[in-house]
Image 1 (cartoon, rainbow, N blue to C red):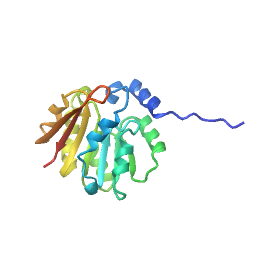
Image 2 (cartoon, rainbow, N blue to C red):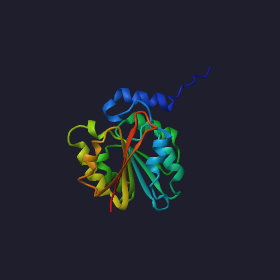
Image 3 (cartoon, rainbow, N blue to C red):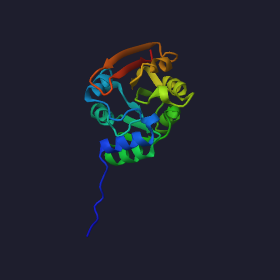
Image 4 (cartoon, one colour):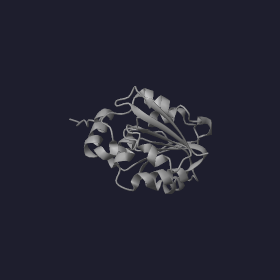
Length: 193
C-alpha cells in the first residue's frame, strides 16, 4: 500500500513559523487581501523588472505580485527561515520566482547574484522594531542603496516605529493605515527620488 504524505497548508505553515521564530515572523496570521491591494497599489508594474520581498513567509504577497509582474521580470523572495524557503520552492513553480535563503541585509549582493544592478521595488513585512540591535538600520540603509531612482521600499508593520528606520534613508515617505487587517497595519511607501 502506497503511503500518502500530508502537505502542510499555508495557514498551518505560517503558524508553525510564528511559533518557531515569533520575533522574525511578527504576526500570527497572514496579511489581509485589503492590505495586499493597498500596499501594492502604487507599484508601476510596467516598469518593474526586479521586485524583492523580505520575509515572504508562505507567499501571501508573492502570488499577487506574480499576477501583476511582467513576464520578463523576477520576484526575489529573501527569508532567513529555511522552512519557508523550502515551502515556497515547492508551492510556487513560476520561473520568475526566485526564493533565496539569506538576510535582507545582503540585498545588494543577492540582487547582483541574480544578474541585476538594482531593484525597482522592495517589499517588507519584517518586524523592524523587534529585530536584533543594528539589523533594522542596516536593512533600511542597504535597501535604499539597492533601489533604483523612482522606486520604493514598501513596508507594512503593526508599529509606527518603522518610520524611524526609514527616515534617515528616504526623503519622501507616504503613510496609511489599513484597518481591515488583524491587527490594523501601518503601511509605508518610502520613495527613492
